[in-house]
Image 1 (tube, helix red, strand yellow):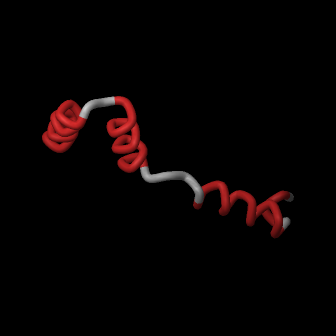
Image 2: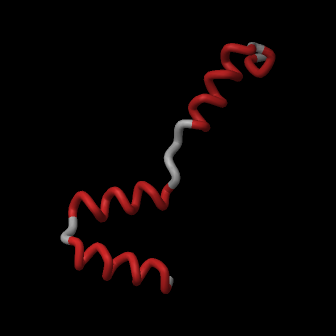
Length: 49
């Protein structure tokens, strides 16, 4: 069984640990693709939601 293999278990933990926080991804996308004013406006809408 694969879950008894320590190297496979370590790989799975590493993959889970490297996923970015979705809020940080959203913020990075807003900063990259929008102007500052539009980014602030959308961020306020997200907070209200």
